[in-house]
Figure 1 (cartoon, rainbow, N blue to C red):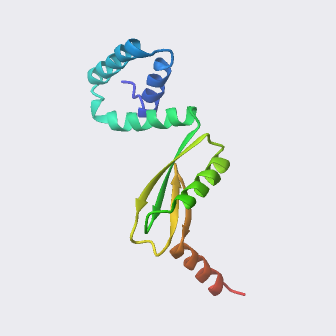
Figure 2 (figure 1 turned 135 degrees about the vertical axis):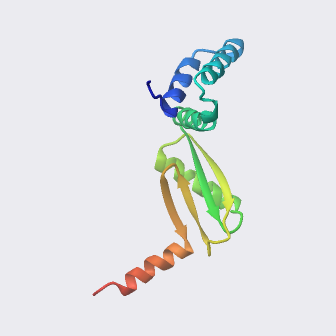
Figure 3 (figure 1 turned 120 degrees about the horizontal axis):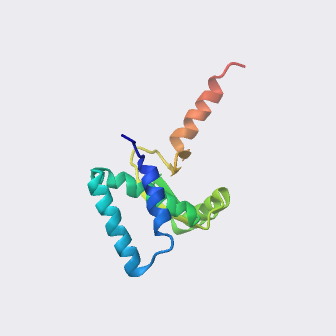
Length: 136
């Protein structure tokens, strides 16, 4: 029995849908669901859709950044972050998903894929502490 990864399925779905629109796309997606049902893969549909979403975002130059902060960010801060992230990741579009985290003392953490940019006060304090107690 051959094992097909969720990512492989997502790539196949994406590739097969590229030239389709409207009714043709609808029929294609129906066939995809039927295939997943026959292969008993419907329970993995959430993971497959997440992989498909990542593929589409990558192809379209879109980055999703999760920002964790104690309070809602100001518009100017979001604009600056969007500009910096576009430059850093060479992306055409940045989608900021704000999430409140009361455990942070201040500042914020940014997660883009597997990368974490920690600009929290707690992280800064830990770095300062490590610097101050390091051997001379």
